[in-house]
Picture 1 (tube, rainbow, N blue to C red):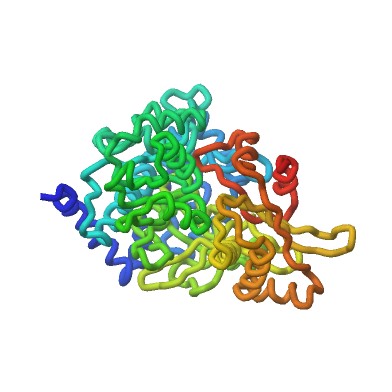
Picture 2: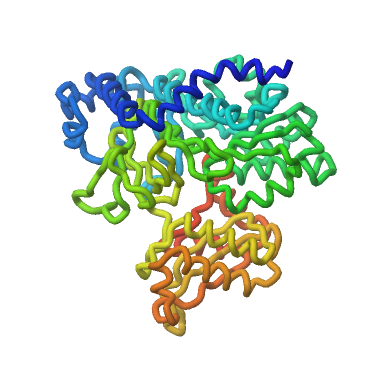
Length: 501
C-alpha cells in the first residue's frame, strides 16, 4: 500500500478544521484573540495596557500600533534573559530579519508557544493541504530537502539562539522529522552559504527526494549546482519522484519558468507559503489559484490598515471581518510570540472572504511613489511576467527605482534586471513592461500620459551574478535575505550599479 495514503489519514482532522475557515472565521479569530490576551495578562506589557480588563476587540484598540523601533527596547531585555516582558515566561529564540531604517537587523522573538502554535502548525498544514489537493501523492515515499539558514548563540544567555527563522525551526524540530528530511542538521545550519551549497549537493544528490522547501532564489542556486555536478539539465533525472516545492519569502513569478525548465515533470507542483520571521500566515490551498488561505486559528490575531492611512497619526484600523476585497492593506499582527499590534511591513489584498484568501502585494517600504504613481511589487511582478511571455525572456533578479531628474530634466523609472534568458528584443521587453504597468495601475498610467510626468522606463541589463554579489558584499547570502524589488530612493540601486561593471 502507498505509505503516503496511510499517513495521510493523520492529516484529516486538520483538513476538516481548515474547512471551517469558510463559515466560522470571525469566531475562530475571536477565540485566538481571547487566548492571547489571557496568556499575556500578567506580562509587563499586559499589565501596562490593562489586559485583564480587555473583554472585547474595542477595548484592545487602546494599545498603540507598534513598529520594530518601538518594541526594540523590550526585545533587547528579552534577549538578555528577562522573563514575562512581551510574552509569558522566557523567550529563548530570536529570528534575525532584514533590517529597519536604523538597524542592520531586527530580532523577532520566537516563543515556545509561537514555535508550536504558529510556525510548526504552518508546516504541518502545508503538508495537510497539499495532500488534500493531490490524493495520488507519494510524498512520504522519500525525503524533503529543506533549505535553512544559520544561527548563533544569543549574547551569553544559556540555551538562547539568534539566527534565521529556518535555522531555529530546524534546531528545535521533533527528532522524528529528521528521519524524513535532508541534509543532516550540521550541514543545514552551516553559515557559509557557498560551502553549504556544495555540502548539500554532495549529501542529497543521490538521495530519494520527493519534496523541496525554501526560498526560490536560494533553492535555485542549490538545484543548479546539483545539476552541474550530476551532468544533467533536468532535475527529474536526479530525483524522478520529486513532486512539490513549498516556496515562500519572495514572489515566485520571476522564477516559475526557470523551475519548469529545471524540473521537467508533469507531476511537479508548486505551493506558496507565507512563513515570515514574525509568524506563519498563509498557504495556497488550490494549485489553480495563486491567492493563499489566511490561517486564522494559529497564535495570530489579524488587523489591517488601508494603505492610504499608513504613516498617518491616527490610522483607520480594521479587524478581519471588516476588510474589503481588492484593497491594499498593511498587515498588523498580535501573536503568541509577544508581538502586539505589530506592523509586519507587508501589504496584502483580499481576493475572497469565505474563506479569507489573499495575495501579498508588496512591502510598506518597498514601492515607488516618487511621482504619485503608487507602483507596488505585485504590479511589477505582473508586468514582468507579461514582458517575459511576450519576448521569451527569463529573469533571475531585479530591482527598480526612480530617476528624479536627469541632465535633460526628465524623470523615469530605472529597472536593473539580470536575465537567465535574454529577451528577443530588449526594446520590446521594455515597451511591453511599460504598457502592462499602465494597464495594471491607473496612477502609473496617468503619470505616463503623453510622457509629461514620467518618461518611458529605462532597462539596464545586470551582469551575471550581480545581485548575488551585492548580497554577498552585505553578508546576506542565504536565509531570509532578499533583493529589494522596488525602492522610493536610489540608495540600493546606486550600490548595485557600482558593482555592475
